[in-house]
Length: 556
Image (cartoon, rainbow, N blue to C red; front, side):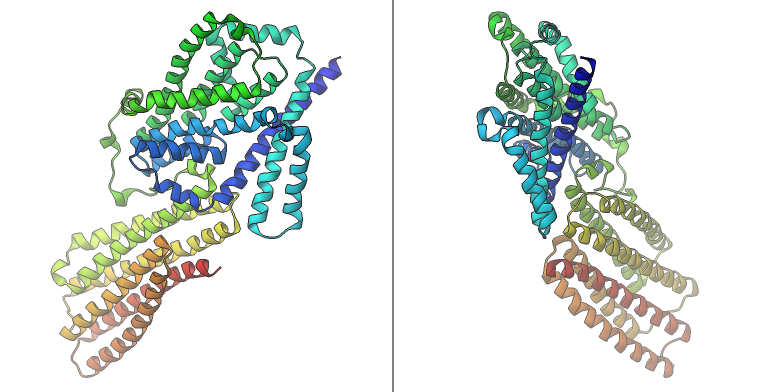
């Protein structure tokens, strides 16, 4: 008897493991398939909270976890990508999206052909066939989704089989009777179990498995489900540790939203069960749990949606402190778009890495523009302006290190071949941008040297510098736009401008040497002039490299 019980326990644990692994594998495949579309979804997260709800539900349905979505939102808020007004809608939508898993689990009841023992082995077989015997990234992604779907159902079957022998056990009947009779205890159990396994989808799946064997009554199932919605907040709360106050408030909004829903529905269902004791004691099945789970989350969103601003204010009471305390200058921020929490969703991590690289490029562009201004206009030259360029260059170096470390982490995630190629190109792009920053620093040093020694260029030399500076600036600017938009027209512009810079640099070199030979220019100034146009030409070369990576991606 002991060995039999131990065997059933092992079967249940193994089934739970396959269920969780299958769910993660399926979600991973879906994320890869979504690919760059995740960036487009983020574009909809405007101040329109209704769109935020819809996007939160859709993204959660894809990644199969409201906890993961909320952690992702905390990361975005911490990175400054979303504000609390935008975040509250996504958090509400995440609770609706998480019901997708419950409907998948209950499918065997309302679609007989989806019974685990009937279809799951076929799914695993087909998925493995696609993974082993076919080529092509897309087919492998579909294979992962199918295998995950099959393993999910096989895991459910294992759990159900291990529990079915105890369906008439008085221990289970007594346990769920106690949980149903004490709403607070039922909510607490649901919250604790969900907090431990860090997935409300998984904990609801376990509850449905028990319900399928006639063990769970309506009253206990309802209160446990309400508790599961609270328990799923733990992941985001843990994740917000170390984040800024606004990100902590996003996690607080998630907790407030789910606790408020549990209180509202807890009171309603308590009196419903008092009025209908037969319903409270009757057994609930998997589909009925799915229906309640969906009705609860949708209704809770409808009820609390108008009070979203109040939730934001209450979160400020939970996490005290003003946002102004944390405001810093743009150039002092090391990473704006990247956050460790976003790594939980690889596709979004890749897209945000692109955004961060573009931001770095824009900072380098600003530094380049300012150094060109003081290079071509002595009136703008001052110690303060030169020092500003040196300070910004230090931040550019910090950015290069931080982004490179983040890209290494992304490269070790489960991403597609195309995304791996993009990440590799981002490595090179960051390096090229940092080199442009070095050349801008060199130019600032030349300006500083000119200021200290008091020499000037000839009028022709000044005019020529302005001309080549403008073309080089346009070249680098177009390369950043190419990276940002992936528009091939910008790539073509860079190629044309790079050719112009090469020709002009050669022409200016010859003219300047001629001026030196005629004594029209000081020798000291002449050497500096040649060094300046050489650095400008190198900036254009790096711009060509950056645009070239985009061209290679479009041609692949």
